Each structure stands twice: as structure tokens, then as C-alpha cells.
Length: 360
Length: 230
Image 1 (cartoon, chains in turn blue, brown):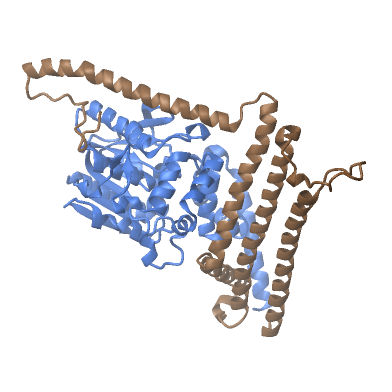
Image 2 (cartoon, rainbow over the protein chains, first blue to last red):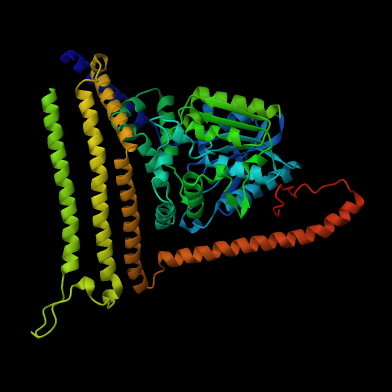
């Protein structure tokens, strides 16, 4: 490499850094807003809230849709930026959209279990939606852990007309037969610890702190995590204003990682990730078995081929276990979060979901 | 960079790593030995029994137990430092392997055409090596030890803090956890009772309504596959 090339490259890099600093000082916190689609609070139960998004067009699809996000991240991902908002796209198609916000659990919530989240909170909100719309069932869109919540609810009640899932793990060991270097870190991390060690870990915090899950996610992309705020920053901040704001929106979302209540975290990590009880037919809620064979409603299962958090085979496995005769899949060529915010995937995701809902 | 200098670098790195791990281990032993072998003050009576190590003394609850809990916490910190060093050592080896690959045979010329490409290529090699490392038994063992030691450390620290909290009439974490569990269970009972009462009120009303309009089904009563109470 010649000295001239090195000089030019260095000058380019410093130029980008300079542009990045210029961009960042021109922005204020008000410029980096997320989840701005107007919504109203419909119901509250402890820390969880049910929101209804304000319709933009006359209703085209009769059955209301409830979006159930995971407790690992915040629901704001489905409405991160106005031009790539899952919620916005659904509203534009005339769908009545509701969403659950799990709030900000802390150690005082450590005893809450899946049963509480699925039947007490989500089930209670489904009842409320049915009461408001004078209907006896809703469509559910479950995302990641929220997908497991909705799956369990759909398998044990008659309240679900359509079940859509996005990046949802069902067979938590399905990554073992499918070697992809970047995938399955979390699955291996859990399997490497005994059930007792996982339980002790969660008990020592009284919960699964958001900072710990955030650190685990960073370890999945080790070098990217190391270079994000130094070497890569020049590229991240030197683009157009929109690009920089979108980068900062994502950072805002990433830094807002909620704690996971302790007992529910044990069910998630030990009973599901470690012991894989859901597909073994051994997962119980309030002593009742969750039988995936009872999923007899239409199912749309969306997963992403480059998802390093939920390896695709762990989602695809649902096909083998669900009892539904109306099962369809959509594979997106992006990562876990790209499913919702990548320009192309976001459109493909919502277009498919809208069409699927419209015909059922 | 020549192959021999890479080997030399690697040798030096490995020697330093081994030295660091040895130091950590020795420090841990030294701390532990220091506490374990510390003895009671010499007795003026020459016929008295030999001095007793503190660690073997009958628990006299000196300082309300804080001394023993401080010792246990210190021991846990040492273990955590040791396991952290072990984990860093395994990861360090992956960095060395990445550098070896990057600086010798595997690098393509186009990856070194300019500074940006060269740096990005280095990051790709490092990332690849680290991801492979994460799948090794050596890494998994070190990671597991580290997680266990960090759990132990938090628990010992909580126990130590609770001595202080108890002595200052402050609620301990264990007490708050007990309290939140009681509240949680009470709330569940209250909800279950509320549902029972609601059902009892609704059944006569639904029966009367059914006599007038047999096809009407109250829309707020869920039809459950499992018969779960609404």
C-alpha cells in the first residue's frame, strides 16, 4: 500500500469524522423520537398497558389485531421510525391495531410468571378488546418471546382467530443440527449452564436485568460491538440527516432494554431454552399442558434467514407441531431487528401480513 | 511481517498470558492463605494450646458476623478475578490466531489495497476467530466458571450488606423479596375471588336472560378450549 493511498484514506476517514461531529451537534434529543404514531391508553393492569392506535383510514379488516412484543426489548421497535413503521403500515391498510406495553418491571415483579403475562395481562386485554368490538376472538401478532406468549394463549383458549408470529423460537434446540457461525449463541450459552446455575444466576439479581441480556446480545457480534462506537462511528454519523437520525433511533431503542421478571425468566431460559419443554409437550401453565397440536387457527410464521438471535430452524419447527391446516411461512433475508426496520423487509413483512389477514 | 516474527510475538504473548494466569492464581491463594492462616494473638500462658487459625475458630459472631461474610466476599472476588483471567486468556488466544491468519497466508491482496479495506479485513478475521472460539469447549468451560463465580460474588456481597442493613434497622433484600412474594400471592388470591364473585353474579343473570333470548351469548365470557375460568 503506497504512502499516497494511506494519506488519502486517512484524510477521507478524518473528513467523515468531521462530518459526523457536525451532524451530531446539529441534532437535539427532540429530533430523535421513536414510537410517535398516535395511540390511546385503553386499559392498565399493574405495570402493563393496552394501547389502541388511532385509525388513519376506514376499517377494512373487521377482526382487531393485537401486537404482543417480547419482554427482552421494548415494543417501540414496531414503530421505530415513521417511514418504516409496522404499526403505520397496518393502520394505512385499515386494520384496527392494539398493542401491549409490558412496562418497566423491576425486582418487585420478580414473582410474575408466564401464566400471569399470558392469562392475567394479555388474556385480560384480549377480553377487553372483544368487549369493545363485540366479538369473541382477535388476531394476534406475537413477536419473539411475545410470539411464545401468543402461541401458548392460542393453544389453550378459543379467543384467537388468526395467529401471526414473527421471529419466534418454538423448538429451542433446533439450532443444534444447523451450523451457521453467527447463529445460536444464546441457545448455546443457556445449554452450557445447568438449570440450577441458571436459577441461581437469576435469583442473584432477582430478575434478568436488561443490562445482562444486552451484554449477551453484544457478545453475539463481538468485533462489531467493539468497533461500533469508535471505528464504525465515522460511517454511522457521516451520512445524511435522515440516516444519522435513524442510527440514533436504533441506539435509543437498544439502550432502553427492560428487566425481565425473575420467575418468568426462569421459565424462558430453563424450561424453554434449556429443557425445550414446549415441543416436548411438557410445558405447563398453571398446571395445564400447552399442546401445540391444538393450534387449529390460521398461522402465519415469519422468520429471518440472518437472524443471529433466533436461528431460523427454531422458528420453522412450528410447522411440524402445529395442528393447523392453514399454515404459511414468510422468510425474510435480514436479521432479527431488520425484520421490522429494514426498508424492504418491513414492507414485505407488513404487505404479507395485511394480505393474509384480509383473506381470513 | 515475517512468519518468524509472528511466531515470536505469539510465544511472547503466550508466556505473558501464562504469567498473568499464574499471578492471578497466586494472588488468590495468597489472599485465601492470609485469611485462613491468620491466628489468634499469642497467649501469655506458655502452656496454652497452639494458636487457633481464625478460619477454624468457633463462630463467635464477631462484628455481627460481618468478618466472616467479608472473608467469604473477598474469597468470591478472588475467584471471579481468576475466572475472568481464564476467560480473557481463551479469548486472547483467539485474537492471536486471528492475527496469525491475517498476517500470513490467508490475506488476499485486494483486502490490503487501502487502509479502510485492510482494517476492515482485520476486523473480519478477528470476528471470525472469536465466533469460532465461542463454540469451543475451552471457551464454554471458562464462560461457565465465570458466570458461576459472578453469581457467587453477588450472593456473598448481598449477605455482607445484609449484616449492615440489619444493624441499621434497614430492610434487607431478602425481606423485600419475601414481602413482594406475599403481595404477589395475595393479589392472585384477590383476583381469583373477584372472578368467583363475578361468575356467581353473572350465572343467575345469564339464566334469566337465556329464558328470554336463548340465542344471546354474553360477549365478555370467553369460550375456552381448556375450560379455564374467565
